[in-house]
Length: 308
Ligand SMILES: Cc1cc2nc3c(=O)[nH]c(=O)nc-3n(C[C@H](O)[C@H](O)[C@H](O)COP(=O)(O)OP(=O)(O)OC[C@H]3O[C@@H](n4cnc5c(N)ncnc54)[C@H](O)[C@@H]3O)c2cc1C
Image (cartoon, rainbow, N blue to C red; front, side):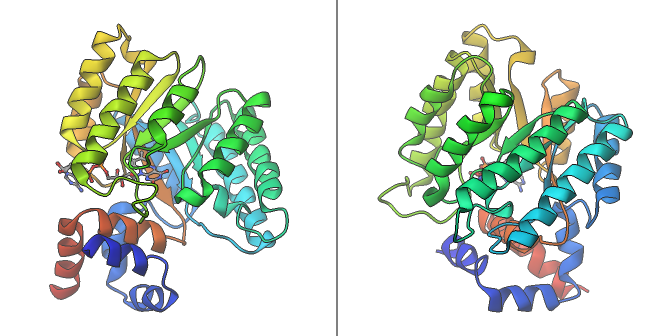
């Protein structure tokens, strides 16, 4: 109930104005968002890389309905990628892209515009010597995103995608994508989805996550296990072991600001751990999804507003 309300608020412009106008929100946002510009993002990436962590950077923004804004997002990614290269960080950091930020929702030709824009980002990533992963948004975009993935992979076979275990379809999607060279980030899923397409019960989502993990670990691709759930991390390690996988043939991923001690511990233990680092000014939707995920995050947010 709370989660559904928070996720509805994530798409409400009235709530958005209220949350953004509160000067104290920023202190809480800073826990989850690396800063508002490229230089802040590069600074955080450098610090995480020094600790032996890998990074994927997300230039915040989504649901763009303006072609000019979509183009600016592409330029921001291109600038970021050239800075990563210049700072010698491209071997440690890649980028994550939401297709809705680069035009997927535009009324005329959205899918084609997003594909062309994503291609420009992939060209810059190739020049920098790193990779791109396509984030997954709500279920109405899954087919389009997977089509775009398949088009991009013709020229850039290293482009990865996210699959969400809460969707009924995802176990089959995992099997379809578990082939040589295919990078799949498996997460539980962060949007409010109807029962017709998604498991509603947390235990059912967890069971689906394990079935999807099994398909990915037993396949030929490169699984990226995106979860903070200690049980899922343990099961992923066991499945990787029984599939005879070397540690370099898969990785774990967690969000910036969530379980940082565990991120460090896993990296020191020899696991490849990648931190998803969002940055930029459009933090509202991302921030609200983090609050929706965990009542403790809302408590943390409210406490920090009240104790100031
Ligand atoms: C790298 C990455 C990329 C992602 N990309 C996408 C995407 O493209 N599309 C999408 O829909 N979603 C994405 N997500 C979000 C994801 O779908 C989940 O909403 C989010 O990760 C929470 O699920 P969870 O697996 O961590 O487990 P949950 O079921 O939320 O939590 C399970 C357990 O994990 C531990 N835990 C969780 N959060 C915390 C915390 N803050 N502090 C301490 N312990 C905690 C607790 O033990 C908890 O009981 C991404 C997540 C990651 C990590």
